[in-house]
Length: 96
Image (cartoon, rainbow, N blue to C red; front, side):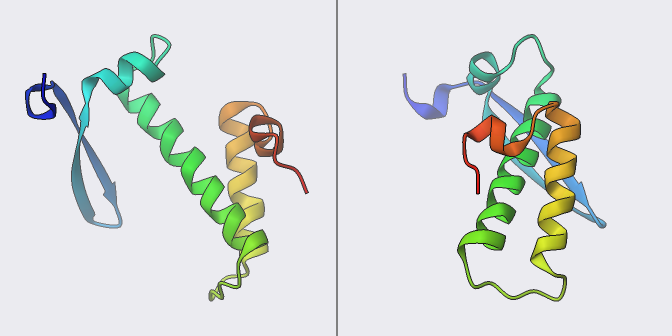
């Protein structure tokens, strides 16, 4: 079976008046979901990856932004813990 014959689910992301569609192999949700809707899986993945990237930028790079990265990291870490009911450090085993 080649990738072109796999079933896909189209996920639409909207932010600030912009939108994009992303086709995801439906099997991804079978692998990652525990009876959760695809939209929940995508939200979990998005927040996890955003948190990972912001943490890396704040602690392991020299990126400069208009908003202090420590403040952005604190906020995204709080949102992560609120959604997953566990800290990012506990979820990843990555602590400072």
